[in-house]
Length: 414
Image 1 (cartoon, rainbow, N blue to C red):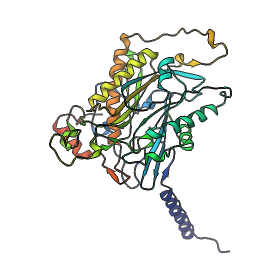
Image 2: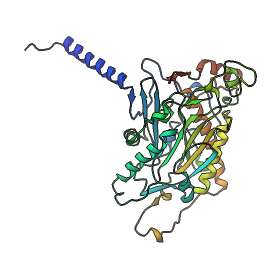
Image 3: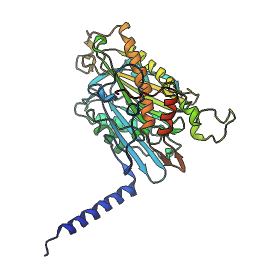
Image 4: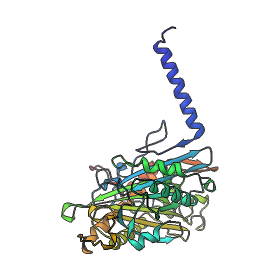
């Protein structure tokens, strides 16, 4: 047999690559994306801060992401199939252990309750979270909840567990996605949880639960940001992740971007033309807040409430059809709620931050929420689905508007 030369080997290798790419194109499926991704052949879209958009006064964490809070990890499963499936699921894990055996203090705050946040009542009743926080598409909430229960029941140490409270939030991606198909199931949920990473950069834009979302008439999606308090204020970190799918009049650092781009809520009613379904203010946003500060349910709920101020800064209209939810939790190890045989006799003796000490954290969550929403827009790319195309926020035109309004940091170290 003739020994293959390098040219033959290269030809076989290229053929295999083509076959693999063809297979991927036919299935149209990307599972458990981790890291920063972008369309092949195009440069990745930059984050707000990389473009000179600096929000607020507080410094960010090392990566300006929710994963800056020690122990927090995020995983995505992104589903892109054919012409109509544009959806996914995102998992946020407060720590890498068994969350049922080591629950974290938590709270849910509701800005407007036109949405489905499964498990929220028990979180607010007991003040704790016992599963990964899952985000997905509206009609997939029951399927994701069921798969999350399967995942938790299968963990070592949970063999005798007879009650699990999955926490699953959603936004409606039906404009771009075949939402009635309910395409996210057990495989996708398990992949998102198992591939969650805390040490990697969190993928943003049209990924995971943000694959088919729309915000301010542009492509929305997943965005994240963080703030770190100075040592004199405790040195605590606050991280935020959002799933943006709502409308209004986009405002960035106070500049009327949506108005000047000609895409905003009530444009048609005010006499303008060329409005579209994508400009509606209806929709939802899920805001997930992590902190390493030692605070309990009561102050976590106060912290979650302040995220709505960050949402308002972006120009959100808060419509009747918008579901605006915030979930906050603390990763402080001393606050873990651990299951044990003598749980009925357990007492706690931990030091919590005072009410007065919360004020800097309130500012941190406001700033991080605002910037996370901007990142969800800047990182998202144009998406077509169900016969609709949603354009990405035009970066060059947006930056020009920000320059004219003095809302862009220039010629300074960022």
